Length: 467
Image (cartoon, rainbow, N blue to C red; front, side, top):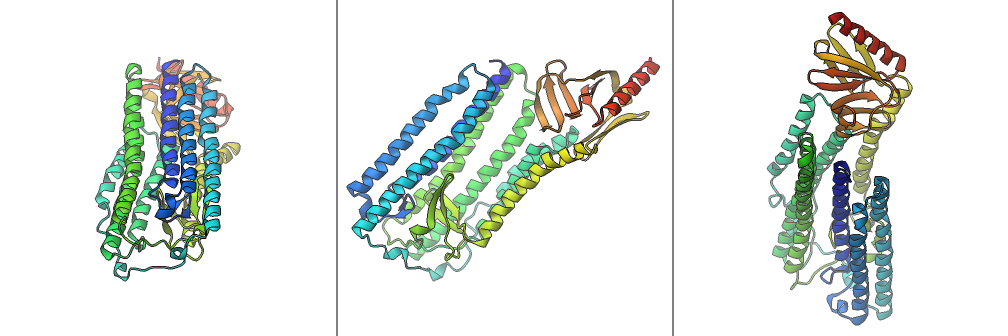
């Protein structure tokens, strides 16, 4: 494999392992003996030690171990000298197929416990009574991670975007999505400040401590998530300056740091869970959530209770949202709506512009070559131009930074024929002007082939007059 294939292999392995470390961890929490709800079913501590319940837990955990080894051993596919397309197909399959298998196993375990609970007539009165600690009426916000910590990823994002502006690259899909995730993280922080207090037990001080730690560790989790995003934004700029010999080491360092941040994020949720379990271990605990409102989906357990006024609910592996509340519809509507608008802006809108020949206008005057359009723009000084060529096919290569869709490509690229260069091209129109300047190579075109050829002829004539 060449250096580019090795880089992609490292990236695929990182995505593969980070996804499965977090996903298997979340399902492991469903079968943990310390969890109040085993597979979303309320199980008293004395019942968990019964042989029939232990057999269900053991069988599911064996499935988890088997799946973990399967994922580890089959990941050797990434290291084989096979076409990259097959590796991408494997990555997609391992992101969804095992999720379905875990979903089926967890639901099977849930049904088994429900059957045992019904046959043995367990006492379930704790699920029918709502307990309220009146001393928790005030908002608990002082325990949260200080908002100033979020200035770190905000500053990192600002530096990355300032670099793009300085290089004249504009906003890429990655930049917009990264800003969107940062905004969602900050929004989540303010939602945590308004999180209703929950009564966990009959001890007021312990109720307050658990509510405080919930806010602290969840706000810490949000911080690590937006920090990961900002780190990625800065790291991709570093790749532009790495030499081919150093590129593998740069990628390795990137994967190590990113994995460490993922570990910190997961660990922050785990620490809260352990703290809550230890704090409430010797108290009379309350559970106000009827198990009939918990369901399994391909993404894990969800809670849908129209009679529960709370939006945020504790789950075995952290916090989930009550899908029956209007706020949940607004929350997920904002996420999916934002993603749809983002994809529409970068894919559907450019396709419409291209279809109507409004994507880009290439023009020349006595001072500059101007590339102008709704999606990207740039200017090239006539004085800096040393040579121009006209090509009808772009060489093979990779994008080091910028935006690439089926309609247009902008940003920095590394092509087989020209090496490092910048491109501002409408991809579907197979005529491109290659402009060699004293600062490097720039490839441009118009969304009308005839206009691109006319600009090339004009530039060629201007260079001949200069000679």
